[in-house]
Length: 461
Image (cartoon, rainbow, N blue to C red; front, side, top):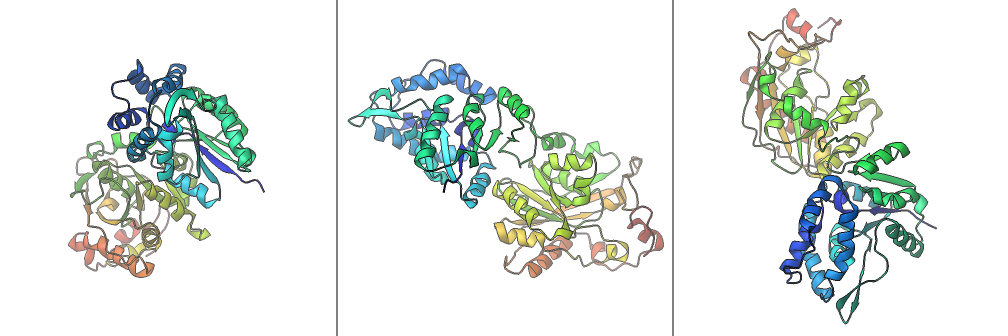
């Protein structure tokens, strides 16, 4: 019975940029290329990174077969092995999770690229691809002879090569997926059942909008838009600065316990609607983007919900009991990004707000067990003075005497990763240790203090 496959372009799709400079360096190190270079290739590579494939750049690629005449095929394959590790480092963060999704779905994963087969097969093997459809150079006696073995795998040539490969492997193109950045891959994108424009060049972006093809950027979570190379969180970085919040004074301790790179689960206590702002200010100081898990009520709200999704937020519907939010968060962590969670789920009301013992839900502990990502605790204090739960907006007028917001980041929490209840208790205890001494003392709140913990229009203790 025919099955589906997933065909992936390489440059500016799986990789953030062109593979050519890395491959050329590997060819030189392997003692093959020396100083032989096609004229203008450096300029074309830089242009390629900016706007994608152009006719001059593809003419350059087509002419490379002549430059390679007399090269040893085995030496070129060695250059491919040298390049593979460096190219793997150029992979877009969300490429691996996407490849893993197709593997779980039972799809064959195929690297379909113009780049010569002998140079990219080692990379395909490192990434776990099932096969490679690529331009092949003809050889005689182990040396390239300056001719192609088959077609130049580009545009209609790539479509023809994919069709023949699919026929040989009993693959149904109507049930298959294709991912590319280039307008010149429209022939292939048009014949598969599930085309995707990835980091598309301007012409492909316009066509994808007309044809309603999904547009992806594999350096950000699915659904996060990009314009001129920027995502919404990049704009947040510009405004998440303490001096732009004159109605609050930030007291932020060292943030170097937040990983400088790689995955991490940042967890904090929940005291105010201002908590996400405070956490963002601290995380931006570390120079990292972050993806927040939030209640469905936030994501379902007009405007605010759209902004939350555009920044890569993950919608949580606790009533559904679904693990989908955790799976989405795991994908973010697999891509090497930060996930931010408030384990309490909601701001405690009434007397619970003043309880020195924090009670959390097990989501963060379960996510840590799924991914082995470190859990970084953050203690927040004073955010409720900036934006009490009883008020619909922050206290923007408190500029003469702004309340202090205290933010402390702790070391990774030691977890068993086997018992989510015990691990949740350890997470919440780690957060409590980061709070000031007054947070750990029992307090008998006044009626006025209790009122501040209730949503607008509510009363009671």
